[in-house]
Image (cartoon, rainbow, N blue to C red; front, side, top):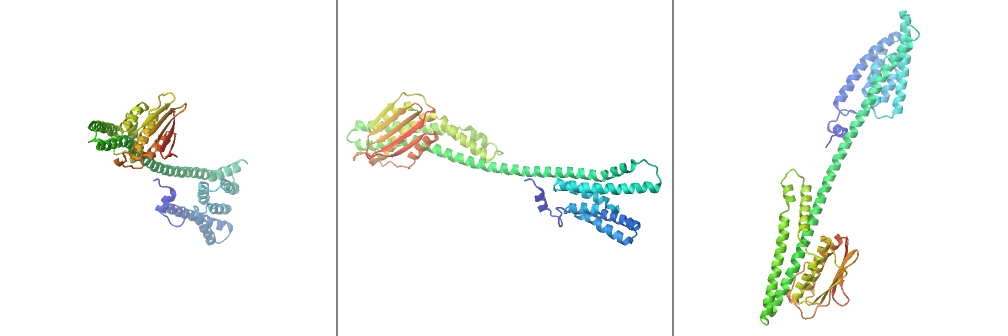
Length: 435
């Protein structure tokens, strides 16, 4: 973190109102020099005014010591220097006081007013002093010399410390502003890094959910059909050997298809070059690894050869092979959709048929697909299951089928509705925008 002035002061405190010991030593040295100057000038002033020399020296010492508080009360220091200007003392105090005043955070109108008062005081004193000097010395000079010299000296004693103080104050404020901006930028960078980490964690969670949903859709349907065929095979093994052989062949085909799809998906996931390239560099932040992993997982799912609507009849044929009565109705002219739309529509029908196998084995099922102008709609509705069915297969249910279907449809901006029918069956409906 960048250290600001306040942090630095807190880290190295100085005495009283000073931020650092170095500043205190500097002010004490300036005050000592001012005390010596004002004491000497007070001695001379006492001789000219006809007062005791000790009184003049004490007055000069007290006045010069005011420079010690120039950082805390710069206005008081300038006012003291103006007050002792008629006594022709405190030149160092006036110069340092004006510099400190101009470099402070006081309003410009106050700085300008006090600087003007100091200039006028110095001008009057210099005019009188130079005129007296020329008169005593008997110098023959023009009328222009005295005001010219007075103005030059007064401006020379007032303008340089004032301008230097204004410059130093502006530079100090600029540096403080830059420090604050650097601190602010560093805090923003830390906040962005934290948010990036949160987004990476969220992305990893989303991709885990998506991959789990994809695995569920690939495995659940075919394994459910395998279980149904195995139950049917057990029931007809002795009564109808020919049908038992046919069911056994179907179980084998289903198992091989499920393994093939699993190998394809896992193979694409393992070949995610983005994850390996990011993990190979130890200097990359964890957030970048998370984003790369999520992106690789997303590409793995998207690039895998997913199902499409042209395979819908084959899907329904597989269910019909188990003894389920399935009617397919297609309305409208078929057209090409995006890969994600066709995969989602296929998975909705697939999962709905899987649920029929699980919860309403043997029930007659109606599958309706409608190609509309700007959307594609699908509906899978099953009638109540018969009393005697293959429910003895005892297919397990994780309760994620409907949730996964809804997530898929909603992700594409569609609408998903599911629920029991009045006749005692179950209906799954989905509408997905075509674009």
